[in-house]
Length: 490
Ligand code: HEC
Image (tube, rainbow, N blue to C red; front, side):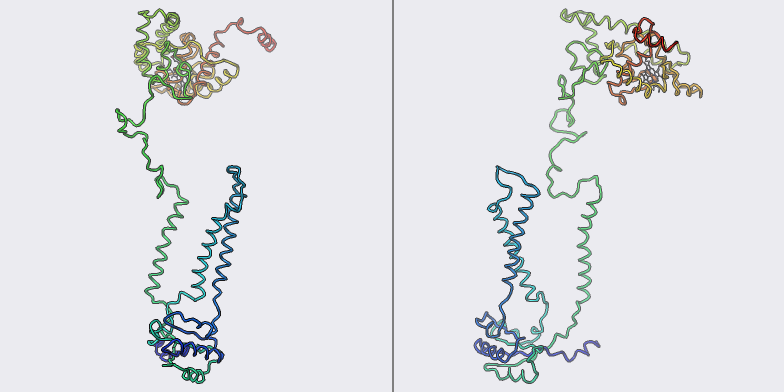
């Protein structure tokens, strides 16, 4: 209230003369300019030719600004294309030069237009001191007709020539003048109303949320797909693992292997993989089907075929089989031995062991299907010491540290690891030992998941070497090495 009281006498900021016709205004402008006034302006309902000259208004500099910005835009387009095409990514396409002016014209043209348009728009606002939300002239009721049928001429009080009475007299004396009006400063407070401030701040804060979310998403990891307006491959028709598919009769999206086929690059020698010699012509089936399926599905008919001797053409494999089978026949009773031999082998071993002979023994490969070199044996020793020695002992006597400890603690359920020098293991085919490593046997777990096939074979070979340390005869040692040993022994 006190502020308003202080402002009861608003400041005079200019004088305004009103005219009825453009010609009087033009004449008045001429006169005022000649009197030396410069801070003047004229307002008309329509563009008035000659008014700029009459008032001495200098032409706008906007065209120059536009020209400058346009030229800048042109060089920006040129530079952009040069840097990207000729410097950063100089690709030669159809033997064309990496940089050539004619090809760059369209972009240059576009950027000239773009920059010029921005210059016009922003420059116009800037030169007109826009945006301005209020002008003191709007508070003069008569001024409303400036857009209708009246013509106005104003002189600013800040004009060097301005003298309160003299200027007023000058305006009063103008021909065709119908009224001289005093223009006062707008007394309303310059500050924004509080409500607008609060709303403005609120909107600004809310507007910060999306960029902040984006910023957070940029640094955070997420298990769900990001908000993705261009969905592309996110929503493709595809079969996900473990889902139902209407395409296939069995409803499975994950397709099982097609019997009789091998995926590219997936072929592994079945003997190498399983330690079992497949029947002739059954290699693929054996390889492709699961281990259990192999034993049940392919082995049984195979063994049925053999006794019948249906196919004379398969005589050779048939000949081989009895040989392969014999050790198994020996091995079967032998397998029960550990249970008898080891008094510690309690009932659980006995209970499980009989279950095995019921299943027909596969056709184990007799000798490891790998190239045995010194490196193989070293590898075998290395793997054996890591994976097997804790139970079977470094020398294979079944006295590994784990076993010793378990016996010391008198663990009631402990089954001592088999002594690898046991007789039946000496004659057991390599494939069978390999299978024991892969799938385990009775109380021993399988190591197929941890030890790759080649290493398993290397271990088998090393086990054989261990056995040889007990069964070997001096005659088996090559003469050269024997000499070395003799020298060392002495
Ligand atoms: C955690 C202890 C443990 C480890 C490690 C272990 N075994 Fe055994 N292994 C046993 C036990 C126990 C038995 C006897 C299982 C039974 O009779 O129930 C056995 C049995 C065997 C047999 C006799 C199989 C048969 O036909 O009777 C062989 C061969 C064998 N293991 C080899 C290996 C090899 C090779 C490794 C290293 C890859 C290995 N074991 C690792 C505990 C182990």
